[in-house]
Amino acid sequence: MEIHQSAEDYLETILILKERIGQVRSIDIVNEMQFSKPSISVAMKKLRENGYIEMNRDGYIELTPSGYTIASNIYGRHKLLTNFFISLGVNEETAAADACKIEHDLSEETFERIREHALKNAPHLKNNL
Image 1 (tube, rainbow, N blue to C red):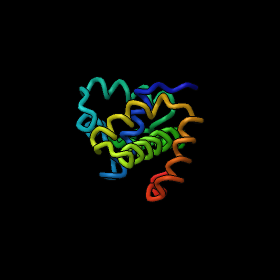
Image 2 (cartoon, one colour; image 1 turned 45 degrees about the vertical axis):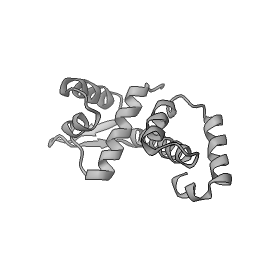
Image 3 (cartoon, helix red, strand yellow; image 1 turned 135 degrees about the vertical axis):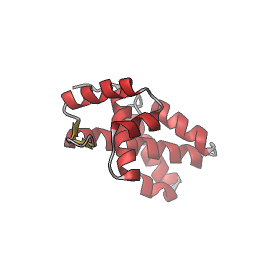
Image 4 (cartoon, helix red, strand yellow; image 1 turned 90 degrees about the vertical axis):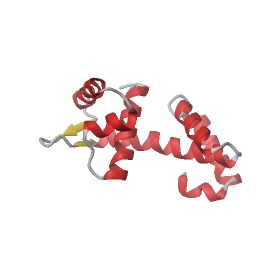
């Protein structure tokens, strides 16, 4: 099943928030992404219906194994690309914004070549690969 960029962004945000604050509710996603409550509600319903998240009775959101796989893949790409761009001399804010723009569209082949190049030429990035 093909997943859309917006769904990947939501799943990535849930993972980031989970790492940062522990438990995640829809309002946390609203605050992080600066989207409206109704938009987040609709998105969470779709993610739940597609089996990417579960919500407990207290309203806390958990990634399912398939949701976690997608989120960690996208977040890993984001971190690697951000750090790679920074190693090229791009400022951190621009590097993160650019990584966010391309993390979804980059082919696996191109991403792997960037990863290999980063390992070879920027070994300090190894922990982020």
